[in-house]
Image (cartoon, rainbow, N blue to C red; front, side, top):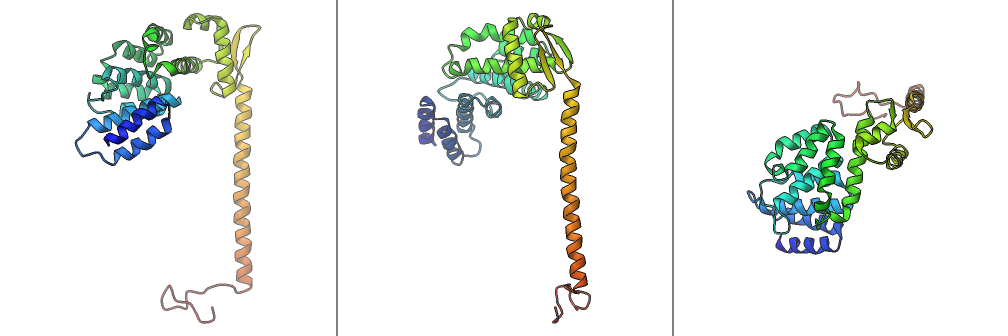
Length: 274
C-alpha cells in the first residue's frame, strides 16, 4: 500500500490521473479493518484526480466519503473541506448539499466562509454565494491542487447558479439579472448563449433587441410531440413483433408442429412421435 501511495503521488505530479485511479483501486484491497488512515488517503487522492479531470461530481463523492480528520501528509483537513464545498456547489443538488452539511458538519466547520457560501446557494442567494467565492478567489489561486482548475470550477458554479435562477421563470430581463449577479451584461449574454447551446437551459432564446431571455412553450410542445412519436414507433414495433409471433404459432398448429405434454407421465417427458 505504501508503494501505491508513492506511485499515486508521482502520478499526480505528472497529471497522470488515470494511473492515480488504478493504484487507488489496487491499494483498497490491502486495507485492514478499522484502519481509516489509508482509505482516507486514497479518497483524497481520488478526489484530487477527479478535480484534475474536471469531474467535480465524482470528486465531491470521493471527498465526502472521508471518515475522521486524519487525511494524510500532502493535504490538511481544511483543504479537503474546501475542495468538498466547492465541488459540492458545482455538482450536487440542494438535497445532497443539505445532507452534506448534516453529515460532514465537523469537517466543514474548518472553512466557515466556504460553508456560508454553500448555505447561501441552498437558500437561492446566488449573488451572495458568488460574492463570497470571489472573496476567496485570491486564496484559492495559491492552492497547489486547485489553482490549475480554478477558472473552470468557478465557471461551472456560475453556470449552475444561472440555471437555478432561471428555472421558475418564463421571461427574464437580462439587465436586472446582470445587476442581481453583479456581472457585466456581455458576460451574462455569453454564458446564457453557451448554456442554451449545451441544452442546459431548454426551450429558451435570447432577444438581444429587448435584452430578455424568453422560454418558448411551443418548443416544449415540439419536444413532447417528438417523444410521443418515438413512443408510438416503439409501440408499433412491439405490436408487429407480437403479430409475427402469433402467425408463427398458428402455422405450427396447422402443420402439427407442436409438443403435446398432456400425454406424458411427467412434465418433462416427450412422446416418441415428437
